[in-house]
Image 1 (cartoon, rainbow, N blue to C red):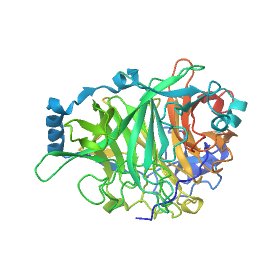
Image 2 (spheres, rainbow, N blue to C red):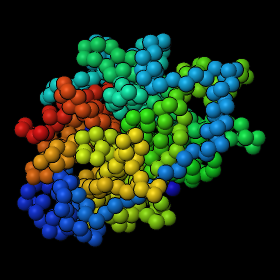
Image 3 (cartoon, rainbow, N blue to C red):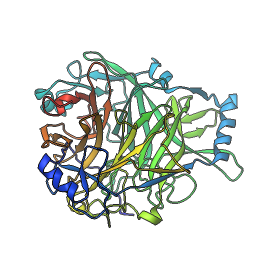
Image 4 (cartoon, one colour):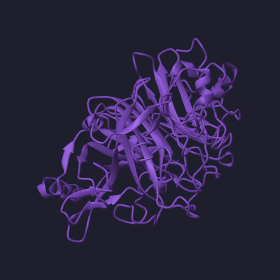
Length: 495
């Protein structure tokens, strides 16, 4: 796989879809405008996508498949034995319990009640145009999540379910941010209740881990390595080179891009750059004793790098790389529309007729073109929050294409009679300039509005008080978690 890349300097952007006249031509060519209407013309995956940035089309005849690969059952059994051993002081809890825990909370500070002017600058341009809720992460309790160069936020998820009702972010860790080729050696979630406007919120860190076994059969907890799907990425793998860890954006200057987080029912999904999706069962969350290292310490208790909580991986949805090929370099186009898919980000779309996950690829400008666009893939979900499979295989529901590069994240919204609106988070202004927000649906031209500095993934939040799109910014000193009303990110009159 490519060499690691240095942490990126990225800004958010959201994109649009073909206008009516263009859509007619695309349908004739076998590519439908991005409205997911029934009766789309079936076609071989060879027609070109519009070269206009900000336009997205449905790729007729293109699909991908994933297969479930559970974590080693014996390792899970060994983990259960470890939890049952009272000496380890591991207590099973729900993610809802974590969000409700008021002990040693880290803080999310409302934008105008303690965030620095530098932090606020990340969302200032967007905030000047539309109403934006925004908070900076803790920088006063000694944790310094706002300014640390080691922990970097990437994904954002909103859940209003029974298993978890709150806000979660995914973060990756750089062992030495000043190294020529920084190594990513662990990952975590931060979990809390949804922050309220004009109020300070709170959150806890939850370390991510993979259960494996040693030669004697005892459980060995492994850190979740960020560089996913790459052979020989170090000790953060589960059982063997190439097993990988959780994907995250901005790890090093490697020509691939990963990050994002979705929580559906009892499951958290994180992207694995060239392999598919990592799955964490929220019922595998444990309260533990703060202490160094990952695993059972000399005191007999389980520790996870000083945190109070740990969450274990339970399996992966993997793509058949032998059939489709591996995720290519960011600046390299895929060999075909239905080949070499990358998994750079993920979000949950509950509005679609079949609730689904959306994954997208991070590509540089040289890695996309009219015949080889960036792909956004819609994966159907079952009622229990797992991906919907037939014979153990998950088949994509819809595949979209756009020539727009630097996509950091996606969100989707579907309305009967109107179809799908696709939102993309796209970088371009580094750590200084804000990006642009576009929205996209069939039958109209792309809508644009100024965005944020250092924007990463998105999450769609269906809410009676007004649907929202949540995001997070990544740069140290300019870290904000924010939301904007969905309808403010598209033309007036759109549903």
